[in-house]
Image (cartoon, rainbow, N blue to C red; front, side, top):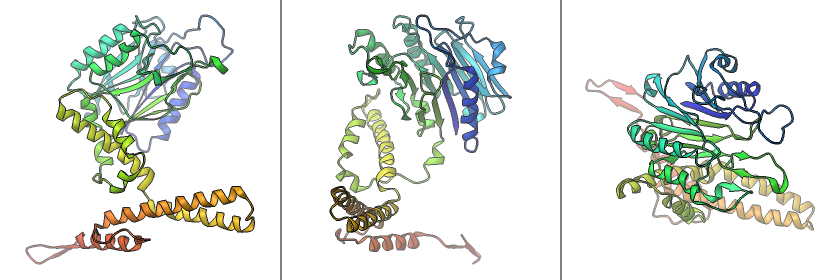
Length: 410
């Protein structure tokens, strides 16, 4: 698993600690560590002054003091006097080479280890002015052609939103220049990497009606990266010293997660949110011919349904058990205080939740056991569960006999 991290380096004294903590927490499951940081925001320490913001210039001479021992880094100070972007990596696990850079981006190619060779990483810090960002949009479109056969991931502060729902507070108008960013992403055939954590990744630091929130930080992938790492995920962490969320990107190899084939559970079709999930996936724009669009949307839908399985039908028997414990506890409390209206409502809600989970459990084991001739009835779960165990035992291979008659146990 490859882990990349992007963070606004408002305070260098805190940035190194954050990077160390993240990598140490993931050291047991990661093989590579990489961080891309941006400078140029107000320092976290001290009182903020109104007016012009204080800038932090990063030169190559200070990089050894920023990164942990054994790390290497590069910056774009040759393209901008402030050195707006810093990229660092664990030299014992990664080897990178710079492809190109300007004041708004640094692109690198991974040269080692072998299974990552050729992967392109672009770290972005877009200018505040939409006119100055035009060169960034042109670069992304041109690079999408250059990297059309290479895995390519872009991450960072684009200083732009894709849609009106990516903002809260401040100006509500949608002007023509707001279309530059979504048009660029669409024409470049890039997809947003699925993410968890904060949606509105930037906070202006104000209070009350002056509060403005925006999603300015993004992670995008091209088709080769999606094919190589279909389970790539991003996480937007809560803000700390910076006014932006730190981003952690995990590129997990498919073989580590795809140990079990996907199975559609018929009961999902009866859930209230099922059609909403399908509609939301099907409304996403995909560039390509009709068959490519269809298969791409099916892959995305499968990912969403896997998440639904984890929430609703995974470990269903344990969820039934916990629901029964909660309901039983509330029944005892209500028996002690039968006039308590809050307990009466709570008891009914937990009863409904328990029986709903029972139906989910029953339907789950019916499909898993492949017993179709018995209609769903009250608590046939044990029968379906036994049928499932019997089928698994029948289909398992306990021993093999070779041509010489020698028995090999599995």
